[in-house]
Each structure stands twice: as structure tokens, then as C-alpha cells.
Image (cartoon, rainbow, N blue to C red; front, side, top):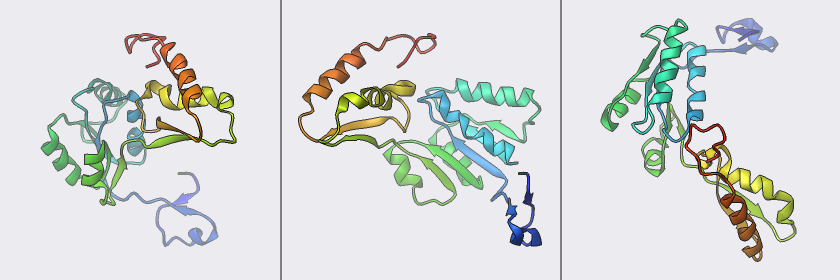
Length: 194
């Protein structure tokens, strides 16, 4: 990065410079298959000089395959980016062999890797919407709908519950009406929402 020094002992660090040092050479990814957006994080590791090993989801291996292919066409070598389709045991071996890792998954993944400081864990979303009695939910209906259904409703940032202080019935009816109006289209359709 501009303005950074390469050694933390550099005297310029004392004058407000940053020292940028990678914490390893190999970055492993256990990719998610619920949304293509999960593949927006790991290419940054390439920009930081890591060699990246991507284990694609069995459910959706196409997005990482396309990204790895495009990165190779752009000049990254086979020794810099690798796509490694494998089972869970093989995926664990890939992660153990890496200096740092990025892992997506549910409660089982949280239990498995939650205490490992070398793994950036992207676990299940637990985002909630809280509506207290002094708030008029009508003023926030668009936000609530987007919090639940935005980005296909598949992200860890999507709300998994709406907590209402008081009678939830009017809000539930309004949400049901809004959700039922969302089109049910194939994912490749340009107007697909879910």
C-alpha cells in the first residue's frame, strides 16, 4: 500500500507510516455455494501477494471456476491460484496446509474452526430486526423486507428473525403481502429477486 513501509523496524513507522506484512504465503478458501457474492473476498488475498487455494462448494462450483479461469487468463499462474474440488477431508487438509483461511458454513463449521486464529470464519447469519413499541413499523417496512429478502435472502447478513414488541400481526400481514409479490423466477433471469 502507498505510504507503507516493508519492515516494522523502519524509522518511518514512528512518524505515522504503516507497516504492511503478510502473515503467510498461502490463503485457503472453503467457498460457500449459496451466493456468488461470497467470492468477492478471496481475490483480495491475491492482491496482497498470497497464493490462493479455493475449494469450491459441491453445490455451486461454477462461479469459483469462472473466477479462477479469468484470473489465469489475466496472468496469474497455476502456482498463484488453484481450484481444488475435493471432499470435506481433503478440504480440511487444504486448510491445514495454508497459513490463513477463509471458511463459510453453519454451526458445524463454527464448532470446528471457531477457535482457530488463522481462520476467518463466515458462519451462519444471526442478524435480527428489532421493532420496539415506540416505533411505527410502517416507516421501516422497506428496510425490513430488504433485510430478509435482499440479495436473494441467502447472505449471512440477511435477517433471520423480526422481533416485535407488542402485537406482531399487522406487520406479519404486511410482510406476507410484500413477500408474496416477489417474483419466483429462475436465478439467471434478469428480474430474479430470490
